[in-house]
Length: 622
Image (cartoon, rainbow, N blue to C red; front, side):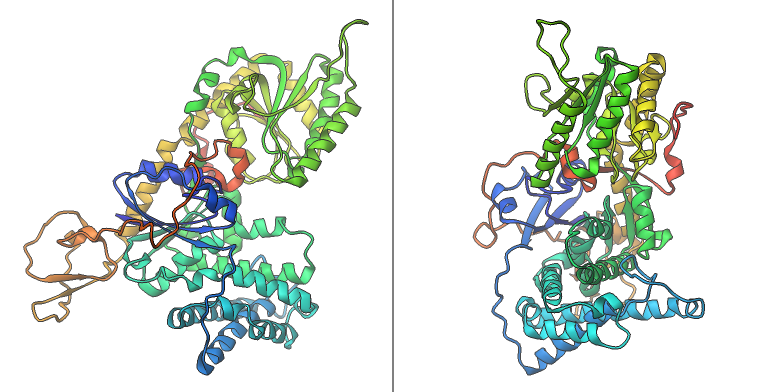
């Protein structure tokens, strides 16, 4: 089987989201052939180079989302008229919002209009899709869209749509700087429309497109389905629309509303056209359903990770310090370390010998400022304590990073404490908790994201932003080592059963075969005179090998290469025509928490979240 793997800001580059699980997926499915189509987000990512690629990756094609080069395409009068029409329809679909149809829609619907809303929603969805595919066909015929998307024509079309009757209030309030910002963001998001990936020698030659995330990464797969009828599989561990709401808070309400409408409608169209959608957890699944995904297409594939680095810590839980609590992750405001420090102050009142180790570093200037604030708060809450008048005092809270002599790896960080704490207020899939479960550690977590779904009944869960509840749960486990050991053992068993790489690979292998079994053969069989032969492709043609002795000649039209006499192989990467990455090729970042929620590795495919709890555990409160 030939798979077109679609990524954005990740694999095959050394740094980026979702790079680790993509690499494990490709290496685990050695019986398939992979063509990687990667969108890059920054020059730094390109210069750092690629990870070492396995032999089953026969082709890599890349395109930039950060470099705004002029394509040099000048439209004639007819092409300009077509562009203005399609872009105007796209802008109208974003500004004329039916409340409740997508997460990007704001407002309320009266009871009298509630029955008409579904029909209007379907009309607006078709309007958006027709405009999107119209722009894609124009780009295919004319050679590109970037110059047109940055033109004054695009801004004026967006302005007319926002000023038209029926436009949403926030769209009507958009000023010229807001419209310029929205037009620039749309140009970047729509750059895949101008790529030359959708021909018979590109994505048209693969059997299946697998998008490693939604949004812009899945747009090439959407166009491959439109132009070449290639089935699309979409895997999401962090829904892009949710990420849009959580980022760029300084933008004006008009910018956020218009971009949210675009991301919401694009997500709805991707979900509508996808053959199958694999959310990483029930939290992402609910977002996808809210965006219009059909429940019949959803199949939960839980993220998973390599358990090998944590095996030693998991097999020797008695080595942990029974009075030490550990927090491991990326330092940022969403992790709410302030609440954790206040909770630890309550813990110290009950357990004076307790110690807290905060292991991790910031990823950006905002995280660095937050880390400095937390260090100052820790110094204020816990003055340095000394055992005697001539001893040097020490703080019970330490801020550390892995890679040093005391904590060479994340496994050593988890192994240093008897209890792992998570205090986040926003979380996707808690990869750090799964690592702690591999290490056999009991956990106390806040009820956010997919935390409850991940730990099941193997840990204690408290409400977020509640230091007193967090402190009480930690004190309860610190005073009960037998219960702590039971929870740790159950957590390790659950993680090994559900979140391993082997089950991830098996799940996606089955999904690939399932989709291909329901996909018609996309090829035309010709007779000796070159005329099409109807009903000449038997079902056995989907199986490798010669099962029939037909004299008909097969002309491949993007179908499986192994279904013909001469396999259609992917062309190898040409260093002269494609950009060769520079820098030292290294493995993906082992720090799973630095990759964010989308960076977790998918695993066992199940239909409902309730089927996860296969480890019988009676402990745990919520």
